[in-house]
Length: 119
Image (cartoon, helix red, strand yellow):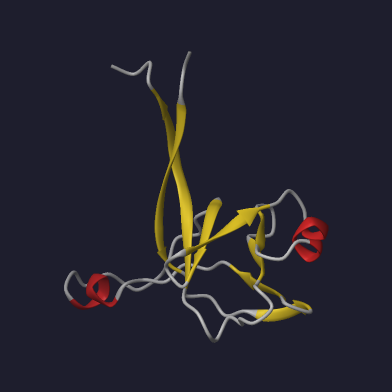
């Protein structure tokens, strides 16, 4: 029997959310250049157009949100998220007593996979 594990790194989401439907908010993912990169290393501040694949969402650092397969699934299921890879848009159906302004969102970006057959 083999075990496959997804590797993702969570970080605070810095995008701006707009209402999509009641309790569902959307945000187009865009990159941000860290200030130390421009201040310390003298980089020009432009951000490469990197395609992301958000594979997990955590609210308030403790509350895992369930991934669903479509926008319709996200709209119908509280505590879910959908990431549209083609448009790089993240949709989150918040618990009905939370809003994007009331919590910090952490997103996990998939970086790869591994299995127990790698030795």
